[in-house]
Length: 104
Image (cartoon, rainbow, N blue to C red):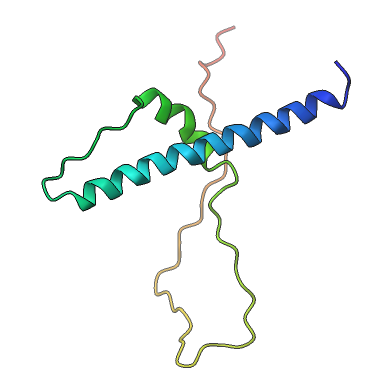
């Protein structure tokens, strides 16, 4: 296989799988809308099993969910700075080995 073809196929596979994951999410949204519009709470069941949900769950949000901060020109009128009374505890960063003790 050509060296440039493999990365191109991987990118195409990721894009198509993300598209399928978003369509899967839309199927869930349509079902939730149908549940909300029915007074008895009876809506048609989803046409897929939980294995499909598990497969597409990791792909649906592969780009992450971090919100981007929009630049502002000034402070909002009446906005107050956050004042925290408690100081957060320092996180201990150390490696905890889970291997059995050395028995030589």
